[in-house]
Image 1: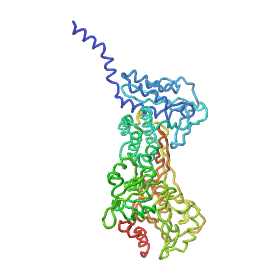
Image 2 (image 1 turned 135 degrees about the vertical axis):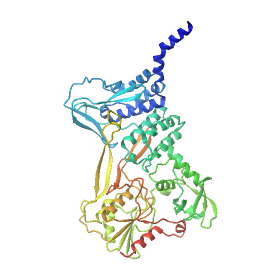
Image 3 (image 1 turned 45 degrees about the vertical axis):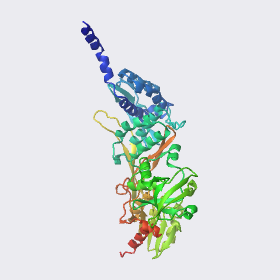
Image 4 (image 1 turned 45 degrees about the horizontal axis):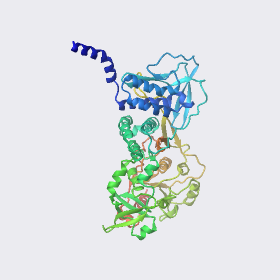
Amino acid sequence: MAKLLIAAAVTSLLPYLTFAQNLPSENSRLLATGKLWTTVKYFHPYLAYRDIDWDKALVDALPKIRSAATQAEYAAAVQSMLEVLKDPATHTGPAAASTEPGASAQRIWIHNGLRNPAFLIRAGGETETITIPLGGGVEATVRLSEPAASGAPPAPAPDRPHAETAYPSTEYRILAAYNIWAVFHYFFAYRDLMDEDWDDLLPVYIPKFIAAKDALQYNLAISELLTHVADSHASVESPTLSEYFGVAPPGLRLRLIEKQPVVTQVLDSEAAKAGVHPGDIIKRVDGETVFDRFKRQAQYVAASTPQALGAMLMTRILNGPEGSTAVLTLEDASGNRKEISVKRSASFFSPPVAQRGGEPVKLLPGNIGYVDLERLKAADVDGMFEKLHAAKAIVFDGRGPAGDIAGELAARLTDERDAPAAVFTGPLTMNPDVPRSGVATHTSSYFFVQSIPNSSQWKYKNKTVMLVDERTIDQAEHIGLFLEAANKTAFIGSPSAGADGDVNDFVVPGGITIHFSARDVRHANGGKLQRLGLQPSVSASPTIKGVRDGRDEVLEKALEYLARPE
């Protein structure tokens, strides 16, 4: 009899046990919630113009979503978040028949990049919704359109920085993970060039964001996540990270030469007196080997190419607190090692110090013009061509950052009208990337071709070359695209950084600013630049011996190339 009673009790409880057993894991619930929250954030029309604190709606619901023990509790927790919208068309459960009056047109919220939301009006009076599965039989329906006459003109509020504390609560850290995933999923220009599926990283990093024990762990988790996008523009800025990497360098400039961190400039007179010379190799920093320091920092620095990673780390590997002393172990030309102490100060590179000295525009022996693109201003371009009008050839030195002078330069090198110089593409976010009947994924994009400005000025017709290396990045690479399109300028040196594209940014909880490439930039023929760099037609790299001897071996190779008979 007792066995029969127990069996009957188990049988009566079976539906409830199955109901609980089908509940997705906490991490699965958080993943589904994140994609639902993102869909509403960028596609629900109310978020475009109504004063709705969608961040707070998530933060308030997360504890209940995480602790849910049954599907009913899970669905109720999600519904508590959606209720903030006060929209009967957005709710847990399947879509219901619309009760809204018919309309001649509907409007949807679209995004031409992260910073350019707008409404698109389209014909048809039916309200569009999408149903999103949340796991375990729970689903949510989200409004995607509304009658075109609804509400006020769109005036979306900026994202809330939530900068009250450097170490936000667990819920706000989860919010940060959602925000980062969403922005890179919908607005990152180079997601197709990533080595990994971006969506696969969210389930890995949500637990890391939750487990972060302090502000530094939280910041480093964000930095580590961004390394997976392989974009040198994908940087993370916060006081916490500045303190970790160090805000102040000694007055030394380094480059990776022959796989060694080599001093190429000594800007601190006291360091020079202490015996630091160009060509010295850094072996240890504050007792830590350079290899270990490089490896430790590299796991938190996003880079488009290996050469770009090396260049970025060389700018920060000696850093430390302002006013602190860097204890360096150096190896000189004789192979002898010495330990020196040098002062760190942001003043050594503030304002930024140019890579090279001397006149930025000059004539070299053999009647060869030389132009340092790092120091050339747009207003000086015409004067530069006047000065070098009779030069046999011109060397454009692009080994470093440059200003927005690509158009001005290229316009003086070609007679072709409206010559294509670069192809731009970017994400056009019109519909949520959520599976629906017959469609597994959904993306849109726009593109335009940037042309060389037309100029009535005389044109320089002789040969030109551009020096490039790992320091050639962004605007300097863009100059390369324009020079290539204008007159097939030859690139001499080593591959550039491979990071060109308009940079956008957003802020996540903790007041942390994240930058990323918002547009894909390519050669005029559509060839790839990102993650590849400008490829030299003549390869040349410096040597440690050359640095010690005060030679510019890449410039020497360029002059040798220009001296060849036609």
